[in-house]
Image (cartoon, rainbow, N blue to C red; front, side, top):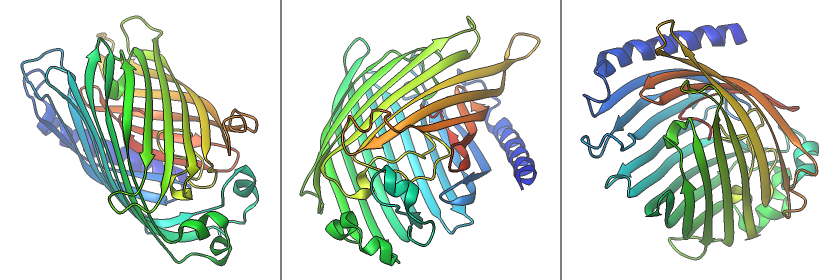
Length: 373
């Protein structure tokens, strides 16, 4: 099964290369708007085997500004063997000579989801799949316009909206306290602020620099919301070059996500996304507080001429913990993680990434754009 998956992946990566060559053969400094089509397979414990297709667009909002990073917009559509459908658009853009950065995530999902309960004990002992399965569709919108306040410092408002519709709920879940409190229709709408320090050379795929951000959002009765709680997200990323001018580095990420107050389980932190502890089933472990740390070694291949090739790989190891309060989530009971990944550059500094992650409970293969952090 895995050999067949790898053969299919190789064919899809080759098709990306051929499709990209006809459109992207003009160097980025001479052609502003670049488009690359793609189709790649994947596998994760929550949606099983999947096929993702779409386009990635990149451009400069001011083609004459040589120091301005390229903006990127991946647009993807995913369908899986478990009947999951996912549409995703993620804008990372730079305006006014990088005095304004506008980031936006728009996502729709309809899938057979899992809910083990809240806390580490429920995640370990709840029977799968009989006591966990239900169906969910949800729409997510995140909007983060950030103004440059000083050298490397940015700040601005943070808007978060997500709507959840749950059905085919199993009897075990119907008796769960968190589900009974919030029901089958959950809308979270929040407004807050974000401040960050960012010295990365290229945020979507940094080779060096430091990133530290704090985001606070208050969810209340607005835009149809029926919940009230707060969230705090602290995100530290550090990139340390280890090979001089070549793109080989150690990347480190430490992150804390806190839901404060009466938060529905759909808003609680849960590891297992393509951007954190890859390999866990998303939704198996969730609680009000999540901490995790990941160290990743990133290696880019070079040709004999000294020019970089589009291929590279990564190795990572990490660990996380969940809990009802910060102390319990401070790695008291560790959730370990490790993995290996393939990178293929389809546009300047923009990669297709394929990651294979493992943990004590599951394994998963993830396909995405930009780095995990």
